[in-house]
Length: 417
Image (cartoon, rainbow, N blue to C red):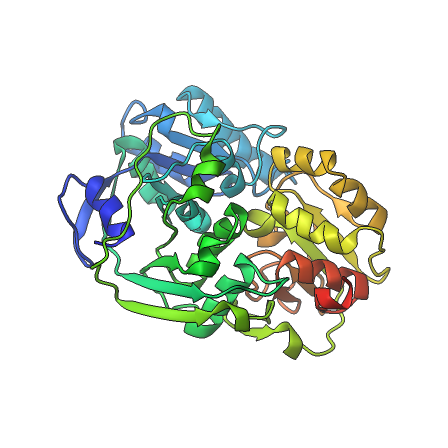
């Protein structure tokens, strides 16, 4: 069996499972946020059950429109907050919270071998820890909160192998954009994506989270890494319970095996209006921009901010644009302060926000007007995703975003450092 199949078999009480099989799976963690929780709560209340299956396995995080941007978002957050308190769920209030997919691994709430379901498509982020994690609709989450189980079809698995050593400014964001550019936004539709190879083994955890996070942008059901020394080091001091490490069998059956040479991959830029519309940085051309966003559940971790600071320190962002930097959690914010990164950002002319999803989904903290162009480290560049339907979003890694902020156009970090 593949990694995904082994985890799903273990959580469905079966010796083995195979692609296409329908199973009931026990959930180790159920997640929702301030946008998706209210719908799940309404559906939960219609079930007629008195309480949730296990309050220690349900997490709610107010991160999309919080701190509340308006009355409507305040009402949504209050509904979630009241429900979480009533049922004694795991809840992170503003001041402690972060972007959910940065926060949960940081807090040790997701561990290898877990099954995690969340009312957010980027729940697949936790596959970086060797967990089977996937997004579901709010009605599915209501049932999961009541029963602790989900009903699903076992996905086939596609194996992606990155050979060799990547270039200086190439990381997880570039690998996953390269994959999406190659196979398309539906190239891994309802499939588990397994990542392998020397370049993958060398990736730090933050780069792995980025790749798993954007598996959904290829249509993937989940994006998984095997547990190794890097994973165990990350979990040391975080894991508060025992966990099980699963590994694909040598004779596991894959739907496809796709191989790449990491040394030939440049930093990637996804042009509007699809994450698959990728080009290497050398083929971008001269594109002036109006805004840069560095953050999100894709690239708002400490390694991402360190990378941006390497470019921005001692320099100034172009006065014709806005540069918005959003740490993924309070822990990331504190670490960035201690390391002097926040100082470098502010002195460069950037604004630094409290942790929030904010502009990624067109929420607030950086909405685009008609005709404006933005380079962003977020995960989606659909029409109207960050504001006006006539605005444009270009996806890139933090080094490209920082270099672009300085030069006022989409730029390679090689032009700066």
